[in-house]
Length: 66
Image (cartoon, rainbow, N blue to C red; front, side, top):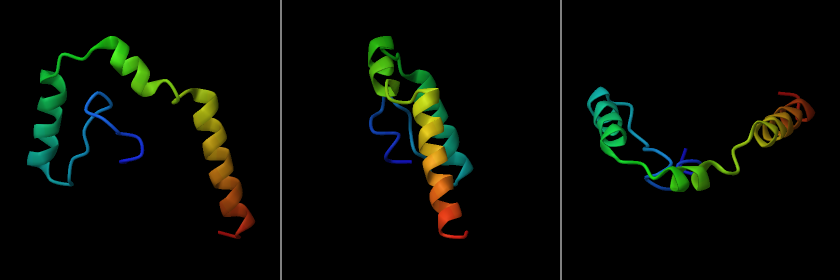
């Protein structure tokens, strides 16, 4: 997740603990997000880019016989 959530604008990473998860959600909701900063943070996460990455990953698994 750390390769995707690279800044506080992109979100939060929480441990598998209900209290931490709730705190992370509260933190996101309390943040006044700058729309331009959010746009910059997600610029590379397009449907075509994600589909290509998933295809590459799955093709590699098939090639390795997994």
